[in-house]
Image 1: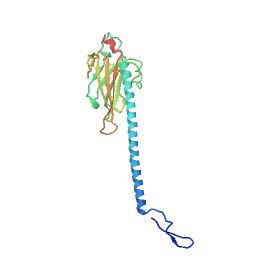
Image 2 (image 1 turned 90 degrees about the horizontal axis):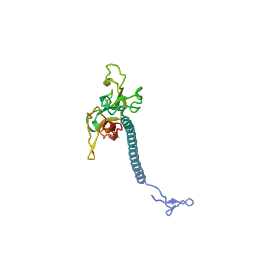
Image 3 (image 1 turned 135 degrees about the horizontal axis):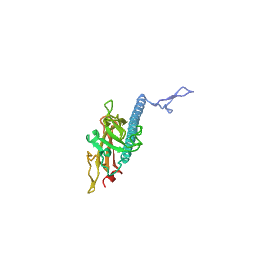
Image 4 (image 1 turned 60 degrees about the vertical axis):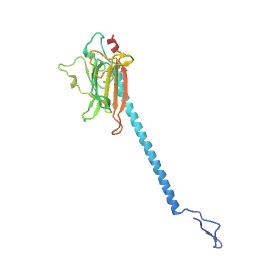
Length: 237
């Protein structure tokens, strides 16, 4: 508001020298505007922070899923078949179809060499061994990806593969779907949900992993690869 200033020598008011100040209403309005700007900035920052955290979590999940997928790919490409003329079922592939989509819990078993999928299991990497990859419930009833592996030779009498304790390799993978094929006709791949020729290996395997959604009710993250098995081509000649 404007007012008059008293002359310091005469004590009289000088109407030409005003006092500049703020009213209570102006102060309240400034505080309200500042509060509004602060609220908008806080919401924007919280939204950006939440999006950043979700992006980082998604990136970590995809990286984890890629690691599991790479282990599967390396394991399939190191499939072992001693002699293409030997049609023994001991070295063939076995698949079990247990649904489609994110809820699929397929099983896939084959014979391989090397450390892929069994790096933490002693005495397997240096000899031919059969691995079984599947998604099932852990001891707490939660889905997870696991591997069961055993040697083909020197097993005790009465050995039962289903009694081999599986090793959990991922608790983020909650679904697994696989399809197999050995030929392409007219540019189209003939995919099979169940591989019934257990004395042979398919030339192509399509594997799909589903990772648990970041939030409840969300969509699972899907990672898919088509793998060519080099040694299988020998068996189809």
